[in-house]
Length: 137
Image 1 (cartoon, rainbow, N blue to C red):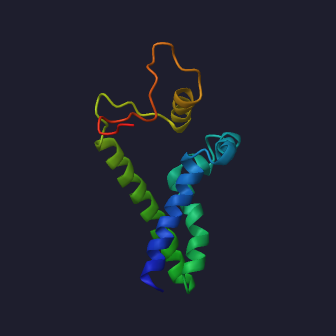
Image 2 (cartoon, one colour):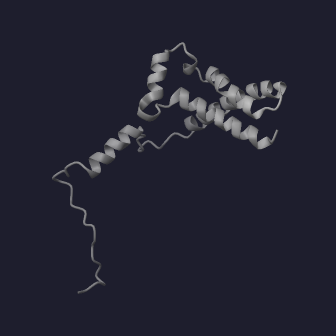
Image 3 (cartoon, rainbow, N blue to C red):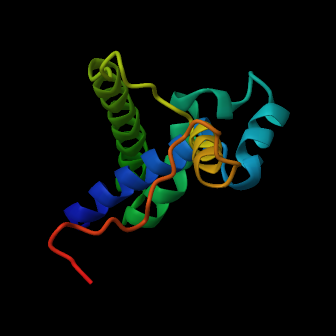
């Protein structure tokens, strides 16, 4: 087995597990699936879900049954370790006090309000082009 397949497999297992466990997905399909499955399902536990996601990856990458079993456990462990590491990094790098973190939907609302809503009366109009002193007609 080539070493880079193990690395790619581990990254793929982490990505799919994180997608199924924590992200909403397009049109919130995955969020609805998690809500439908309930809190006691494998989708609610990153550790359990990584075991399930790593099975097909290990079967594709591994060449014999022993390698596939070892890869199954190693890929799951790597995904868990990567998730814990990324969680630790995200907690240790807190944003400055003056920065407000926005969710993607809050960011979209703020951008829509800024660019598409009616301008507030006290907002000065921003000119698109301001001639400099060097330019004379």
